[in-house]
Amino acid sequence: MSLDLDKRQRAILREMGIRVWQPMAPATAVEVAPDLVAASEQPARAAGQFDAERPVTPAVMAPAAARPMPATVVLQKTPVPEPVPGLQPHPDGIELMSWPALQNAVAECRACALCQSRKNTVFGVGPALAGQAAPQVDWLIVGEAPGENEDIAGEPFVGQAGQLLDNMLQAMQLQRGSADVPPKTGLSQRVFITNVLKCRPPANRNPEPAEVAQCAPYLKRQVELLQPKIILALGKFAAQSLLQDSVPDLQKIPLGKLRGQVYRYLGVPVVVSYHPAYLLRSLGDKAKAWDDLCLAMGQI
Ligand code: URA
Image 1: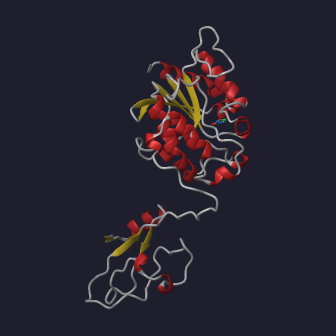
Image 2: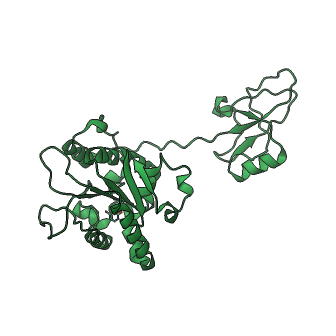
Image 3: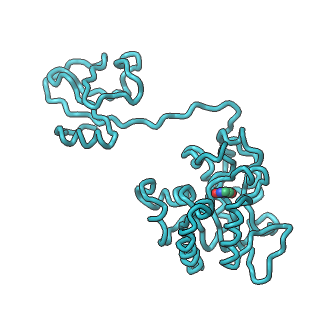
């Protein structure tokens, strides 16, 4: 990719973190993509340590007819993670799996390093299965990832944040599905609760993008099989996982700005709200969360 860039444009690109290769000898050099230059022939430098305007003279450059040399924008590659021993790729055909097969695939999953520290996978919780079919629900609640309690219990949202979520559900006349607890009068159990990640990140750290990507096919298949009428995305990671293909520049948008609209994921309406763990610390935003729940209730 060649661009004629003036000094100001190069400065803007530098600010954006885009490195520009500026050739040293316009009269004799030919343009060579740095990727094509053997590593041993590249000037000694650590990855990512290009100086924006420092000249580069790879050894494979051959003299050519004199012509002005355009600047070259060097696109940086995403680092490829080292393979971790003991990991295996997903099973094939997640997109065709039945509900029980999907549950089993999650239980056996060793696609990322979280499998090495988890006690249990956390597939989700909802009303009892009807044979091989997915449970029949109206609502899908998507949180972030299991924490310590959830890892032990194998069930999402069983800690303090889970108690608040149960109260939120009750305010919407919903109740978490459970084989042991019958629905209270007037409450519906047509709700399934799950997370973006099915395994606990150690020390409750944030999910990493590669982990979210590994788990995404499971969440996608859950949505396809559950066919909920509405998805409630709780917190930044749920919103980012579900809306990444439909909202441009999503990473730059704060959660508060994603609220108040109805999005779509696989054709299902999605409403974004605060994560219950955040609401436990920020009581003042509970009223806004209630607005979000009302918006969601209005979709079904
Ligand atoms: N936070 C989440 O996002 N999910 C859980 O299951 C528990 C806490």
